[in-house]
Amino acid sequence: MLVSHTAQFIFLKSLKTGGTSVELALQKLFLPQSVMRKQLYFEDETGIVGARGEAPSQENYWHHMTALEVYRKLGYRTFNRYRRISIVRNPFDKVLSQFFFRLRQPEGFAADKGKFNAYVRTAKRLPVDRNIYSIKKIICCTHLMFYERLQEDFNAVLRELSGGEHREAELGRHKAGFRDKSIPYQDYYDPDSRDLVAKAFDFELENFGYSFAGKGLPAAAAAASGQQIAG
Image (cartoon, rainbow, N blue to C red; front, side, top):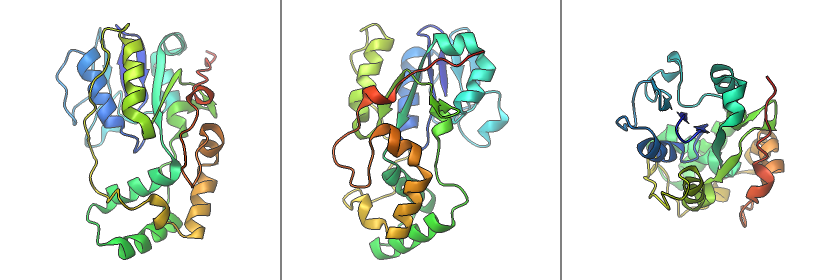
């Protein structure tokens, strides 16, 4: 997560959504210290960078803090005054991405599909992360970017944060490359794993217009309600 006191925004870093790429780009533009993929917690008068790397939650601020954790540390006045930004992704694609990130060494479609469906059935925790961009199921972000059009959404947010000074910035590709993207995510699912993911991510499917078919893009206007949280 990032906080910029100069540009007055909070970036809430969700799971498997390109968050590291966005975080590093925002850090480079709005926070003056060095930018590294792995780094310790940093804070000064310009803002805050949550720790990235080994055991980051042992720090005062860390990368995947929930909105409630950030709210409690910053205080309700600052949290509600600043723009709050996060990223969402089609849950069916997101779960497969998490699986390959953990697998690291694919063995081929048939073997990977079997392992994936076993993973969905037995995982103690799927990458459900709505508490990063919502508090008690209230979406608290003023701006939500969508993974499916991340570069476009990022540039739009960037222009607003910078008052038009920065028109665009190319996002890097961090923590990517573990999966063959030529195979549609739908091909990996069996009926049971599809139902399990749909049940786990019912909130996301209802609020962001995502579906298993994955056709089209969700409507951003319906997602970023940006409700304030009472003190």
